[in-house]
Every structure is written in C-alpha cells, then in structure tokens.
Length: 392
Ligand code: EPS
Image (cartoon, rainbow, N blue to C red; front, side, top):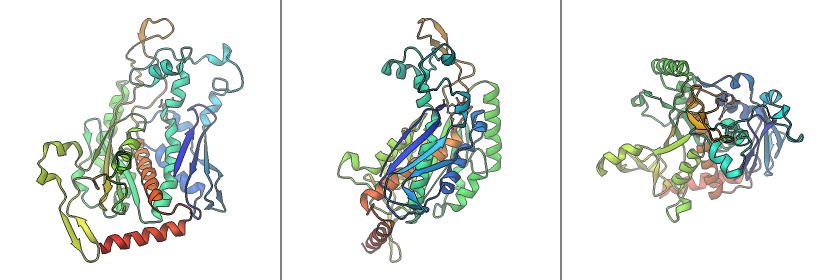
C-alpha cells in the first residue's frame, strides 16, 4: 500500500491517493470524517480551526460503500481558501494586488529559509510555507482512517494520546493494561489536551494559556499504542525491512516531530539488561508471550505480538508572536522573523496524526505480508497465520 498527498495550506483542496487497499472493505466518508474531527479538536490551536470544518469527499476507488481495489482518491476542501483565492490563484500571473502577503523574513526553526534556498523562492517564502504547513496532516489522518478501518477487520487497534506538554506530564503509572484500548480511548478523548485525567488537563490548559499570553509556543510528547498486532511483522534480515525503523521514519516525517522512543526508550540507556529484556512465557491458549513490554513490542525489527508502544517528541511550533532574530532575504538586513497566524501548541492534534502514521505503517506491513487483492482472502490469511503462531 502506498499513498501520496498534495495541496497547499491556503490552496483550494488537500488531496490524497491511496493505492493497494484490498477490494471489499466497507468505507464511507463518515468513517473518515470521525478521525478528521478528532484531528481538529485540541486545546491550543489558533483561529484557523474555527474556519475549517474538515470533511472528506471520496472521489475514486469506492462504490456503494465498498472499496474496489482501485486507487482511493480523497479530497478535503480548504474553507480558508476563500480568503486567499487571489493570493493562491494558479492561473493568474503575479501582480501587485495578488502578492500582498509575501514572506521575506524566514522564521528560525521553520522550513522557510532552507526551502527557499533549495527551490529558488527568493521572491516569496510563502511558496515554501504553504506546503510545509502542517495543514497537510489532514490527509495523513484521512489515509490513516482508511488504514485503521482495514486493521480493525483483523483485530488491530491503534490509539494516540498526550504524555506531556512542556513540563506538565500525564501520570503514566495509571496506564498498565493495554489489552483493550477502548478504555484508554474513552479516557483521553474526553480531554481537549488528550491527557488521561482532569487535573493534568487543567494544568496543561493553564500552561498553554500562559504560553499564549507570553506570545510563545510549547511542544511535548505523544504516545501511540497498537494492540492485536501479530508477531513477525517486519524482519531482521535487512535494514529496510525492520518495522521499528519504518515506524520511526513515519513518526519523524510529521511536521515538528524530532524524536522517537519505543517502550522504555531512552531510559533503557540507563538501565541494566536484566531490567530491559522482556522474559518469555508460554501458555497453551495463547502460545508465546512476554511477561513485560520494556522493548515496546519489537525485537530484531519484528513485532513480538505484545502491544507496540511508541512515543514521538514534538518541538514547539516555530511561528512566534514575539519573533526571533532573522535576516530579510531581499535586503540581507537583520530583522525580526515574520509572523504568520499559528497555534500555541498542536501537541494534542499531533497525537492523532502520530496514531494515523503508525496505522498507515502497520497497514503497509500487513499488506506486504498478506493478500492485498481481496479483504476476505486477507482476513483468512491473517487468521491462518495467527493459528500457526499459536501452535509454534
Ligand atoms: C500551520 C499554521 C496554521 C495552522 C495550520 C498549520 O494555519 P494558518 O496559518 O492558516 O492559521 O492552523 O494547521 C492547519 C491549518 C490544520 O488544519 O492543521 C503551519 O504553519 O504549519
């Protein structure tokens, strides 16, 4: 399964084409829209989210609510485009009237400067920021919704939540049983910060409010858990087959993500081997299992059958309302960076996007391993494989 997205933040549409989803999967716009709504919910977002009401149009690959096996084409309209129609017009050459929102003072930490140098956008860095904007993640979540729908057919569930925003941390001790993500989902989705309890939610909101008053931004960490994943996805035999490395790539590909941890992650570097390895058990009704999950569901680049536990580190958004020092690319004079409307934090939204990226990567691994033509055959092969694993 592969996909591609296109579209500029203030252009008319965001688009995605997904190739390789089996025929016979029930898929509707409503199923995707539920995930798009989750992405729009999140404390700390700016005014743009009041303008957008993201809903998907399915333009190809689905008929009578069933996937056909042909490429699935998805579109989400940018409502804000109405306010940018002249500035983003693809058909009218540049005039003084349609180039009034030029960006010439790159924001430190943003793609602005290097993107401009690379593509030669010396006249206007807007040509960079329109695509490097995290608006593109609306399509990652749409594609992720399709992936999650496929994974649900074979008992795989994926959920993301917030571990910390700046110094305010979710008490993770309460999270011990990953067997069923329904409870975790209900717990974290009730809070706009996607933390796990009301007290932390309150503290995170206060931090975000204070950060906004300070005209600053704040980052954090999100965690994604996937359950029901069979052992043996990915492989140890070659570098590019290691599934944990593919998940790491998928997570860091999201705007502003700067780090990834599996299971105990970086803390494992300070522990001894006996504290980090997960001991092996066996029971007739479930086959092999681990008695702990410090390695986050991976050994040798392969899934172990335990839940996948992956964290992603999100840096603060680079657009600061109290801008940092920069240089005007037209005059080469020192100046303050330009201010574009932005968010104080997008960490709660980032949890939904990271969840989508893990789901996409798992769906790809499952479709690499099992039949990708027909859902019935895909499901039968997964069942057969699970039986083989249990009988090993
Ligand atoms: C973004 C800047 C803001 C965010 C945007 C990402 O957009 P605008 O400049 O239009 O206010 O709201 O995120 C979204 C539009 C979205 O749907 O997530 C940026 O510079 O990355």
